[in-house]
Image (cartoon, rainbow, N blue to C red; front, top):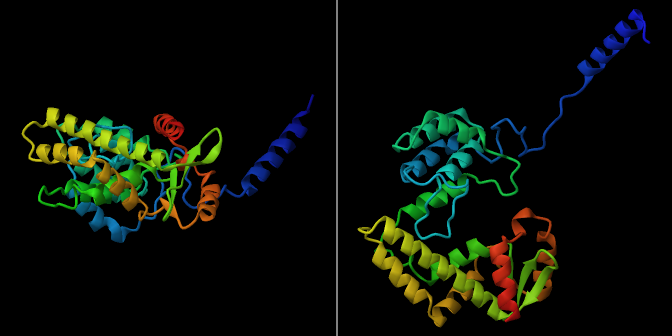
Length: 287
């Protein structure tokens, strides 16, 4: 058993050692789990841009799961995604702005806002950022007279947003690579891409149906339903696929370069497809 003097000396030594320890330095972009510190590249000069974007977004939407689904024609259930994107800045000024924005909805509660803000997780494999907020603002500025918005070009962007990191096309060929968690990147034929394009149209049909039920008097309903009918035709499915090859991260010039790009992408968490997409892809490639 240690005597009194030995205990005192030991405690003194421990205190001295602890005092000399250098605080752990977190890498850029990482924060303590209980801190809403910076995880995105935000500067105060960006504040006016963010304020303008939030002015174009209605907070009166579903809470959602913390993401902003830009594959929808009219995104919904994005409130938590916007809050977490704002929390990623680590700015008190942005928090006040996000609170003021949320208060425009009758659904707002102080406890609900504070709880959502604290739940932001900077260690998430694909954390939502302000870029999604800016894209959401642009998306919600829908104009039915804008022919580009409901078009093959718009559908190719939806295709790219849904399958980026899960699918790679080889330009000027009908060859594709898709990511199978059990096998890695596997070569597939053009029918796999066609099958996936159909799922984009199915998403559009589901969204059009929900919007019709939720907002029967909305001016966009007819446009959405007509676009689903148009996009489901084979030439327009093909156009969606071909135009998607020009989107960032969806294609490579050769099978070798595609394989190299795929190999580099495998460790990234966002490359892992969800179970539904994985099943659809495998079924089509085998059919």
